[in-house]
Image (cartoon, rainbow, N blue to C red):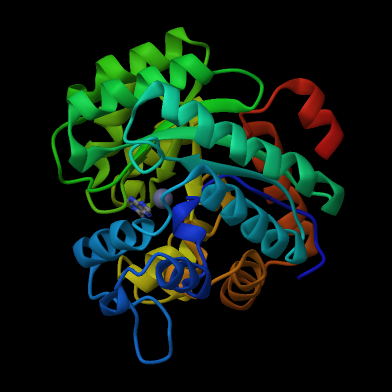
Length: 319
Ligand code: ADE
Ligand code: ZN
């Protein structure tokens, strides 16, 4: 499983920061963030809202473009070891320069340089600029401006994560319109914490091609049919859903039922160290739960390849 080539579309760069990496930066900067770790040194949180708090606290020591470049280097090295050949990662101007366009460009260029150097390990990174829902619509518009100013063949998309219970998708339509007009492809987290209606509203108001998670579509047969018919792609992160308690275990996760219904599903880790996962572990657990074999994973990777937001030259190179 480890050596199978993998395409991963749903991944948060800060969420992939190894605890030891964050601890070392905090020590170097004399910051006390010991409260976010458990006794074994891993991230410690209880429930989704505390996860979001710990996640944000873990970004505090990541305060310079150089820190983010080092993070990209560490993350890509680890992902490449698990066979990831192409990764789309959510990048947050909220944490990289406080949504100031000039500062954001410095962070972005540092991350791009690190990613270019990592190509030698056989892994390609592309960025999806991401707003954070619970920071509100105004912050989302500032984030979209950062996305507009850096859209191209490396920043390929615009997305939204954060607390799905904050606000309504229509509140973020303006930010998504800005990103669409800049030529960016779109995705938003939905149907992780809220039900089918949230997925419908996200499709209506934000006109996204992909949905982050989207797994709770399974609660509405008509929506499942609609997703299958229209080819909306779900960025499914089973290990994340199990770790955060959306589903009890892999066996009760709806990914296999969604796939059988003809929905385009893909597999990702979301925030690997927070959920004690890797792409290898996701594959192993799915193989165990559903009997999926190399042929299944090859088919799932073809879906992911076609759903990637990169340009056609990049797609052909990673195929
Ligand atoms: N940001 C990082 N991980 C997330 C998740 N699973 N849901 C919403 N926002 C997130
Ligand atoms: Zn996510």
